[in-house]
Length: 441
Image (cartoon, rainbow, N blue to C red; front, side, top):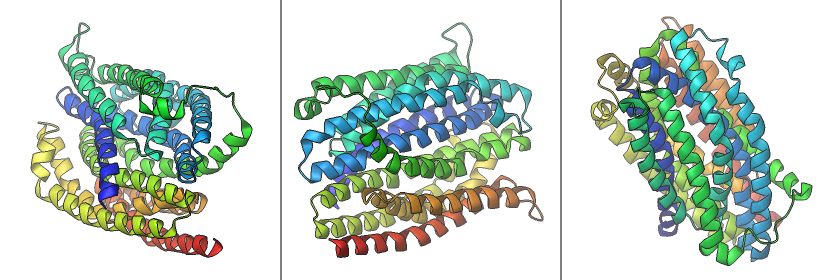
């Protein structure tokens, strides 16, 4: 447990700093207008869904590097990182095109014209940050796999501080002549994305990782043999990320017809949910690295001990987080907005987030351990069924067709059910994979 906490804490700070940029956008725009806040709720959901999907592919670097490091084949890890960079650049091209032309996603939904225009402008600007985001996340996966996450914490905190100032000045204070609202937040995000990418490249060249692994020496052109490994692991991981994140972020699109106030209230709770998720996610990333290294070394007792410790930590910490959300609901929501209508919507939803923390934590740890075992296809199928079938499909039914309709609360109730089912399916799968792997050895 001490080892996992020591590894997970810098990752947690880095993850909170990353998601903190969304929190800053929400807090700033909550004092601009409901239309700007709704635009970032919808546009931010689309953007983060795309980024998480593509990041899932390049994060295949992590289990490959962890296995090589555990097997004491450190001379091969720089080549994996370089191929990850090439893959990140390739994936960014269709992603940028999608963000510049999001009409086929937005057009089917009945959306206020002002909000629609703001969403398109917001996404069009964020397209220019996508290559930087994918390159940085490749570096991120490399650092975590080797147990070197502290630099990520420093870059994340610096980026968050700069973004808070820029977003406040551009979106609210009118530093460019007039308050830019959602567009101002997008401009700040683009700047911070490339700044973080440059800082990561500088660290790779001059820091301890550069001295130990020389990642820019003997540069390799794209190699299909390595790409095949990355894509075999990464495509299911990316799709799993997509279905999981869209089960929460794209709810804003489904409820856009309910009005800007409902969308804005949902955005506040989605932010709190994302913040709470950073704890099990950080622990899951640390667990993936530790299990991956132990698997590379074929140390089965260390694998079992790591998984047990991670599950206990996830269970205990999720209960604490859920209780805190329940007790501090009014205080937390009040920090986001002073609009009483938005606050009323948000407070009515926070109980769902408090309840599902326990199950979300368990299924997150199980999913990341399975990634360390390089088992990604079956978890993808399970998560697709749970998050698209139950959370989105069931949520839409409860929101609009249940008698009487539950409104936005129907989506959050369905999310609770989906996480319970995901944990119930992934945990037995993990146990079976662990048993089969040990027997095969």
